[in-house]
Length: 190
Image 1: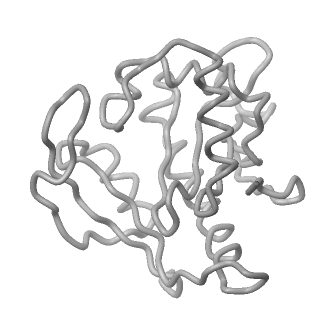
Image 2 (image 1 turned 120 degrees about the horizontal axis):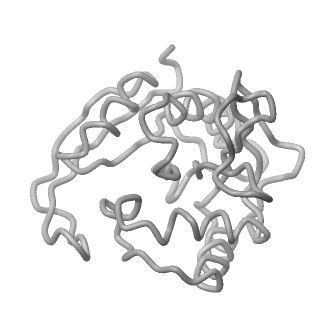
């Protein structure tokens, strides 16, 4: 089982990145049930907490998957998405070196994704450094739909560079055949 060590966490001015836990399933389900949040993913929206638990368990059993929750810090002026959770997003290695993120729609356009990504990348490169049996990656790679301009902006602000577009390489369950833009952030890039 590949769980992020509870000792690994990172903080920014407004956010805490901490390991994804099975107990986060209700917060994860808030995002996974929103059609707009899931629109550019390979998964259809589903409002089933048990399916969200299964998804989290799947993250914990794949060797190339290393995921975090993104929480609002108590000092952040924005209200949490619902009582009992401060989780507003997910971020991690989905198939290392590929990274990905997902945020509750109420927190889009506020700079949270960029802030969280900047905090996550040092964790990613420290974890995937070739030590202790992990593979070493010289870059983190992110994939985005060619029409998902907001995500492209997040990646650029976090220091990723555009590499290529893969035409018609992705079958989206809602949108059909899509093209993917590939972005990379290299280990030694500032």
